[in-house]
Length: 135
Image 1 (cartoon, rainbow, N blue to C red):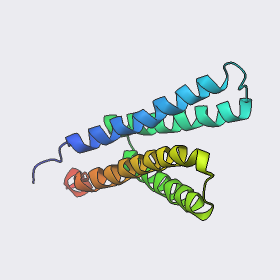
Image 2: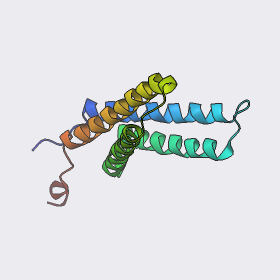
Image 3: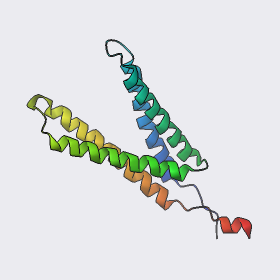
Image 4: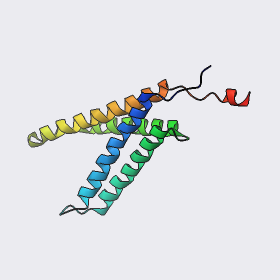
Protein backbone atom coordinates (compact mmCIF):
# COMPACT_ATOMS: atom_id res chain seq x y z
CA UNK A 1 0.00 0.00 0.00
CA UNK A 2 1.51 3.38 -0.97
CA UNK A 3 1.91 5.96 1.78
CA UNK A 4 -0.83 8.59 1.99
CA UNK A 5 -0.12 11.78 0.08
CA UNK A 6 -0.98 15.32 0.90
CA UNK A 7 -3.90 16.46 -1.21
CA UNK A 8 -4.29 19.93 -2.64
CA UNK A 9 -7.85 20.13 -1.33
CA UNK A 10 -6.70 20.04 2.29
CA UNK A 11 -4.10 22.72 1.60
CA UNK A 12 -6.75 24.88 -0.06
CA UNK A 13 -9.06 24.28 2.90
CA UNK A 14 -6.34 25.58 5.22
CA UNK A 15 -5.83 28.64 3.06
CA UNK A 16 -9.60 29.25 3.04
CA UNK A 17 -9.53 29.26 6.84
CA UNK A 18 -6.84 31.94 6.78
CA UNK A 19 -9.33 34.28 5.05
CA UNK A 20 -11.67 34.52 8.08
CA UNK A 21 -8.56 34.95 10.24
CA UNK A 22 -7.51 37.96 8.19
CA UNK A 23 -11.06 39.34 8.21
CA UNK A 24 -11.33 38.98 12.00
CA UNK A 25 -7.96 40.67 12.48
CA UNK A 26 -9.04 43.53 10.22
CA UNK A 27 -12.32 43.94 12.12
CA UNK A 28 -10.39 43.98 15.41
CA UNK A 29 -8.08 46.70 14.07
CA UNK A 30 -11.02 48.76 12.81
CA UNK A 31 -12.81 48.30 16.15
CA UNK A 32 -9.92 49.91 18.03
CA UNK A 33 -9.70 52.89 15.69
CA UNK A 34 -11.70 56.09 15.73
CA UNK A 35 -15.02 56.49 17.51
CA UNK A 36 -15.74 52.76 17.71
CA UNK A 37 -13.46 51.86 20.61
CA UNK A 38 -14.77 48.68 22.14
CA UNK A 39 -12.11 46.58 23.84
CA UNK A 40 -14.34 43.54 24.34
CA UNK A 41 -15.44 43.52 20.69
CA UNK A 42 -11.85 43.89 19.55
CA UNK A 43 -10.65 41.14 21.90
CA UNK A 44 -13.28 38.68 20.70
CA UNK A 45 -12.26 39.23 17.10
CA UNK A 46 -8.56 38.92 17.93
CA UNK A 47 -9.22 35.58 19.62
CA UNK A 48 -11.28 34.46 16.61
CA UNK A 49 -8.45 35.55 14.28
CA UNK A 50 -5.93 33.56 16.31
CA UNK A 51 -8.23 30.52 16.36
CA UNK A 52 -8.85 30.58 12.59
CA UNK A 53 -5.20 31.36 11.86
CA UNK A 54 -3.83 28.54 13.97
CA UNK A 55 -6.35 26.09 12.53
CA UNK A 56 -5.51 27.17 8.98
CA UNK A 57 -1.77 26.78 9.55
CA UNK A 58 -2.26 23.42 11.28
CA UNK A 59 -4.27 22.16 8.32
CA UNK A 60 -1.84 23.50 5.70
CA UNK A 61 1.25 22.10 7.47
CA UNK A 62 -0.59 18.89 8.58
CA UNK A 63 0.49 19.38 12.17
CA UNK A 64 -0.42 16.75 14.68
CA UNK A 65 -4.15 16.98 15.39
CA UNK A 66 -4.99 18.91 12.21
CA UNK A 67 -8.04 16.71 11.62
CA UNK A 68 -9.46 17.69 15.01
CA UNK A 69 -8.90 21.37 14.25
CA UNK A 70 -10.50 21.05 10.83
CA UNK A 71 -13.56 19.25 12.15
CA UNK A 72 -14.01 21.57 15.11
CA UNK A 73 -13.74 24.72 13.01
CA UNK A 74 -16.00 23.37 10.27
CA UNK A 75 -18.77 22.14 12.57
CA UNK A 76 -18.50 25.30 14.67
CA UNK A 77 -18.93 27.43 11.55
CA UNK A 78 -21.90 25.36 10.45
CA UNK A 79 -23.54 25.80 13.86
CA UNK A 80 -22.93 29.56 13.84
CA UNK A 81 -24.30 29.92 10.32
CA UNK A 82 -27.44 27.94 11.11
CA UNK A 83 -28.09 29.89 14.31
CA UNK A 84 -27.53 33.23 12.58
CA UNK A 85 -29.76 32.33 9.64
CA UNK A 86 -32.50 31.19 12.01
CA UNK A 87 -32.19 34.51 13.85
CA UNK A 88 -32.36 36.47 10.59
CA UNK A 89 -35.49 34.66 9.46
CA UNK A 90 -37.18 34.86 12.87
CA UNK A 91 -37.46 38.65 12.92
CA UNK A 92 -37.96 40.44 9.60
CA UNK A 93 -35.54 43.33 9.09
CA UNK A 94 -36.76 46.90 8.64
CA UNK A 95 -37.02 48.05 5.01
CA UNK A 96 -33.92 50.24 5.20
CA UNK A 97 -31.73 47.27 6.27
CA UNK A 98 -32.88 44.70 3.70
CA UNK A 99 -29.76 45.07 1.54
CA UNK A 100 -27.56 44.72 4.63
CA UNK A 101 -29.45 41.57 5.57
CA UNK A 102 -28.94 40.16 2.08
CA UNK A 103 -25.20 40.86 2.29
CA UNK A 104 -25.12 39.19 5.71
CA UNK A 105 -26.86 36.12 4.34
CA UNK A 106 -24.36 35.92 1.46
CA UNK A 107 -21.43 36.10 3.89
CA UNK A 108 -23.01 33.41 6.05
CA UNK A 109 -23.50 31.17 3.02
CA UNK A 110 -19.85 31.74 2.05
CA UNK A 111 -18.81 30.59 5.54
CA UNK A 112 -21.08 27.58 5.16
CA UNK A 113 -19.43 26.73 1.82
CA UNK A 114 -15.97 27.00 3.40
CA UNK A 115 -17.01 24.73 6.28
CA UNK A 116 -18.45 22.09 3.97
CA UNK A 117 -15.34 22.22 1.77
CA UNK A 118 -13.10 21.72 4.82
CA UNK A 119 -15.12 18.68 5.92
CA UNK A 120 -15.06 17.13 2.45
CA UNK A 121 -11.33 17.76 2.00
CA UNK A 122 -10.57 16.27 5.42
CA UNK A 123 -12.64 13.21 4.62
CA UNK A 124 -11.01 12.61 1.22
CA UNK A 125 -7.40 12.67 2.44
CA UNK A 126 -6.18 9.25 3.49
CA UNK A 127 -5.31 8.72 7.12
CA UNK A 128 -1.89 7.46 8.12
CA UNK A 129 -1.88 3.70 8.58
CA UNK A 130 -0.29 3.15 12.00
CA UNK A 131 -0.33 -0.63 11.58
CA UNK A 132 2.30 -0.30 8.87
CA UNK A 133 4.60 1.49 11.33
CA UNK A 134 4.39 -1.19 13.98
CA UNK A 135 4.55 -4.27 11.71
